[in-house]
Image (cartoon, rainbow, N blue to C red; front, side, top):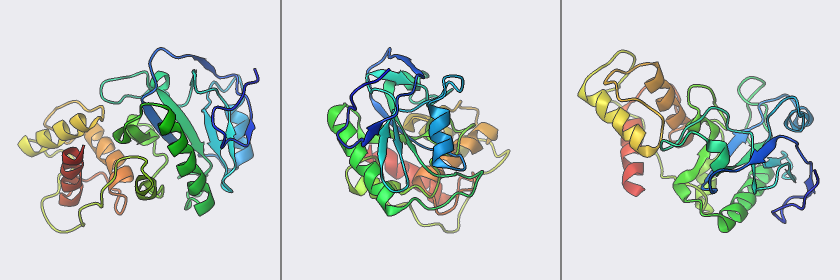
Length: 247
């Protein structure tokens, strides 16, 4: 299937067969890294019918943008995921794959030209769709037990400065009570309720269990990247509370 690119920023179309009909309106913009050793390998996989994965856009390290799936179609990029109680994230999102080998193959900083292109593309997309800033998310936000991308090196602050996504300067890391494995009680319950209210899929158990640690880790990767350890220190909890207030 060939199609005309939705964004004038796309230099070319590389049509992927991996898509189907949407069942929800678009209200999420989801960022990924490719997590493979080369861009060519990643693009081949996203275009392979048997792989059954795809995204709408693909951004090379030099800033070149390709479109793989029309925005009106449901690309297969989020997998098993959830946000704010919605579980078919593919139906309501536009997915952007950003070339980076990821944690498995030598995670590295995203080049400035690449991020400039991502920002321009995101701005173009949110201008055409009703996507609120707090619904510009990372793959790890909607699938915290499975995914790490786009990771703690992704410059969410730069995107927010350009009007894309929710961000504030994280509270400084310092001393104080840290919640960690097997802690339980009211403090853990409050943390879980705040994370769930923010949008993460997290049951309220009052126990700092593995799922809670995974969600805290995902939150840190996006909103407090200076230290990603899955421990809910004062900095993490204060940053979360401030973001909830800002929303």
